[in-house]
Image (tube, rainbow, N blue to C red):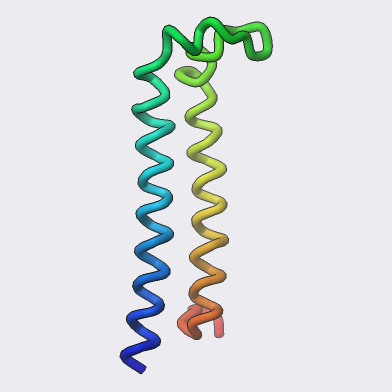
Length: 84
């Protein structure tokens, strides 16, 4: 069973670090390049402005749904889902 627990936590950790990296990218890195992104128009707005005002928030909500779905899949495959 120990080997299964190790696999579960490795998969969970990989998912967590992937989501953290995406959060850092859309929360901080994108905003460092706001001036360059403002040269691109998106829905009539400069892309840097759009990402700061709405784009990052939309990505965060999508990430939440993806994380919940991916973690549920891991839980079910490893036999630790709460509703089993």
